[in-house]
Image (cartoon, rainbow, N blue to C red; front, top):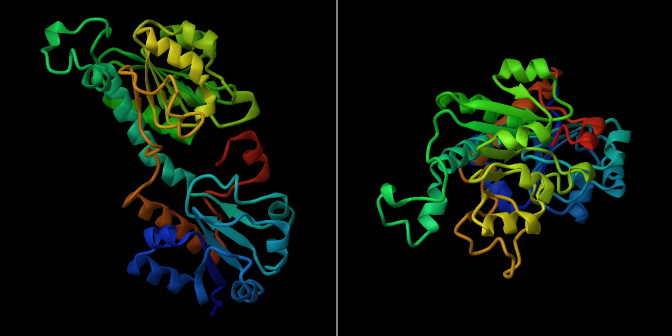
Length: 339
């Protein structure tokens, strides 16, 4: 009979409480040996350091301390880090890859609510619902009085997806529920045939921008993508187009976007901003043409359980020595192709 590996849960206390109800904690105990403490947010505590000596697998999430070389050195038996959340960029470093420790991410599971939020934003953008609701002169009048917002429709529209990422792909698929939608994708790393099979067309960004009614951003945060959508790119968008950002705030030049929205030419739905949160004097604040939400598109509430289940499914595969489905590599992380 195969011996169960020793495991440690590493995350903040609120994260632990959100991830592990009694049923999920029981499943975890069936898969691994849980010592004392079961959970920690402090890998430098003496009691935890004593445990690290024989820990073979960590389950991590929000609030986990960075796995520095010193902390990795204290865990000589560590062979896997299974992240119960999205990005591992701030968690793992070069020493993890050098040691050959396997790393997985819950980014695939986290992509589901982000894509759902994006679809809802696209549908609301088609009707300009958030902006009409914020316009005190129009909110309480009939549709016949509305002007200056463009075509209030979700039929026969063109949506541009920047970044054929795991979220971008899901959004392309979800858009099939809308009638006669044209979906364009801009991504220098995407394969044209793969995009076509998904139901979209791969085009250069400069060709995409003038054609779209809605522009939705799903690119990674890299040096090359900083202000990917700046004043020049925004100027190419048609009048009354809506910009949606659920990716990273730095993808957009906030000053340029604020100017376009203040002019009444463009609209924006932003779940992420740069900086985040926006300063009180940001020109993006208090504009009826801009809807800002507090980074809520990702997994929250009961959605967090899906992340836990995803990580424990990976744990079950790892303990059975089966291939992992969401393994992250250093190369993919550097290119922004993985969370």
